[in-house]
Every structure is written in structure tokens, then in C-alpha cells.
Length: 452
Image (spheres, rainbow, N blue to C red):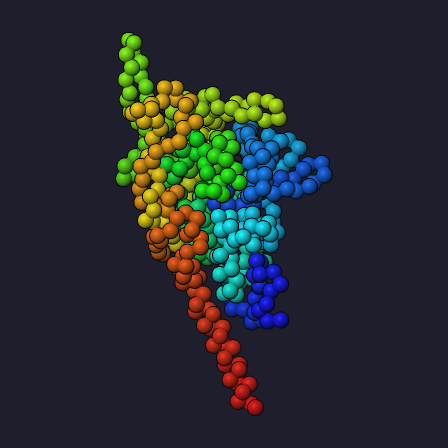
């Protein structure tokens, strides 16, 4: 029936009897870039809790709200009857493709939840086959980027792609925090004789990674939360405050705080307009906190923070145990070295106002008690970047890059940008491989014709 599809919302896959010889590609997501399912421990029923549009906030509070366990290093769901997992369907690609894959979202083409979808389609058009040369790695993004389960999961995924493709080395394409995950893997698997990365990886294309942190966005995430979707759609999504109560207990967030040891062009700051009272006189002063001083601010601002879960109040102050863990993660990241034989490429977003300094209160409406910060909205000062990660941070990877390219795109739009696709095609040498494939096909056809 040719190219006709009974279900136009879902497209129509193409098949090629003579695909080009391709090195496998592994796509690695960033924070919030993996579907999460809640699985009941008794009956084993699974429900998608991230991302979902219908009843998003309610299900998130019931199933995703978590608390950090300093004994294990893992963030664990408050609901003890369920566990969160990432679905492995479609060789890991399902979880990082369209983050709400419900039929109505696909038909309405709500692109806010289209994550690696366009890139997956592009790679398939060039002959990549799911489960043979194309794989995805989504993970529980609440956890630390160096936690054992995530590191082992990445190792297994690399081994799987390597073996499925007949022993061809893997090309990694990571987005956002996924680059930190890969960096941790590099650092923790750096044995010269048993270097897993060098054994399995050919190229690493890193997109929009906050190598030195994302100061404005992360500082505000810890103080007031994070809104993944803006505009009208936000009313159907997880609220800023609901997300805030999760992020306070996520090591991954603390690991993206501004690196205090990085030589920033200027230090990122948090400003607070404070109301001061002394000797029956009041005044308003602007206080500023650098990355080290901000820790005390986090502690004071979050000291009263709590949530209601299952009829109980649970205190969620700034978590010093997570901060200590994250500080050790920073050392792991600083020690990451690219092994010989692995090529590194970097794409970073530019030309968009990106939060850097954050300010709470104003001269006319100052903050009296620092806990008030958690119920205010910030004002930002901006630097060049992708709207989330400053270009300065994304460029400071510490690796010897074959090429670094700035693309005028936002943090999520960069995964749908045609200029990015052309760079990926160039670096993976796809045009040349497709040309070689077609030239071989043409020679066969010519030989057949000459025998007629």
C-alpha cells in the first residue's frame, strides 16, 4: 500500500534491505528526559508518572515524591509500596523518545514532550536499526550521576550495543546532564588495562552539558522549584512547588550547582533584598552570596520547608548529606580523562538569555525572613547560553575536543535543530556511508543491466 498509513499521527516506518555499515549509536538523556513508571510491589502494575499530562501533579505527589537515604546514597520514594523504574521497551528508546506517548499527545503533536524523537527519526532515515545500531539509555534522574546502578546500567548498555552490532564500537550522543553521567563513568572506569570506555566507545558527541554547573537555574530550583513547561500547558503539568519538593532530595540537582573552584568570568551570585531592623529603625540592604556563601543561604531559606504526605508532615530542609555526596561527585568529574582513541565533540547552545545571578525580593518589597524566598519568584541577570546552561559552562568540558560548535538554540530545541543534525551526520560520516552504499547498489544494478 506504498507510503500510506492508517494512523497518520504515528508516521510510517521505512525499511531498507541493504542498510549501510554503521557504528551503533547510544542516545543518553538528561534530567527529566526519561519516562518513569511506578510499579506496585504487590501486584506489579505499572503506571507512567513522568511525564504525563492528565492528573500529572496528583500522581507525581503520590508516587514520585522521595527522600534521600544517606546510608545507601539513593533517593527513595516516600510511597513504600511502589518503586520507580525506567521502561526498557524499544531497546531503551521508548523512554527517551516522546515523554508522554499517549495517543492524544502524539496526534496533537505537543512538541514540549518530544525529546529525542526527531533525532531518532533522523538516524533511522540514515539506516540505523533499533536494537542493532540504535539504542537509548534513560535512567532514574533523581539519583546521583555516579551512583552504582546508573554506572552499571550504562556499562551494560554499551556492551549490548557493541555485541548487537557485531563488535563495532559505539558512538554516544548525550544531552544535558547525560554528559555528566558519561563523565562520571569515564572517571570511575579509568583502569588503563581494563578501560571499558576505550573498549566500547568510538566517539562521544556531547550536547548542552552543564560541565561546571547551571548556576541560575539550579540555585532557583533548590529555593523555589522548576517549571519544565511554560505557558498554558503548565496548568496541566507538574507544578513548580511540587517539583521543588522533589528536587531538594535529588543528588543530581546538587551535582549541577555552580562549581566553586571553576574560574568563572565572574562568580555567579544570589542576591537578596533584606529588611533590616536595628534600634527601632528599619532599612533595606542588598545582600549577595557567592557559590560557597550560598550554602548558608540555602540552609536558612529551607529550614521551615516541609510537605504533607499520606497525612504526615515531613521536614525537607537543605540536605547537607546530599551536598557532601555532590562535593565528592565534583571531584570525580574533575578527574575524568578521555582515553586515547576516543574522539570528543561538543555542541552548546548560544544566543539566548540564560539565568546566571538570581535575585529575591526588591527594594520596595524586601525579604524579612529568609524562608519567604521559597514563596517568591526570582529576578535573573543573564549571560549567553541556551536559556538553561551558560555557554561558558558547556564549553568548559576539560577534554581535547575534535570540534566545539555553538548553535543558536534553546536547551531542549537543540535536539530538534537541523544544524545540529547536520553536525551529527558529518561527525558520524553518514553522508559518506550512504554515498558508498548507493554507489555499491548502482554498480550491482549496472552489472545486471549489461547482462540483459
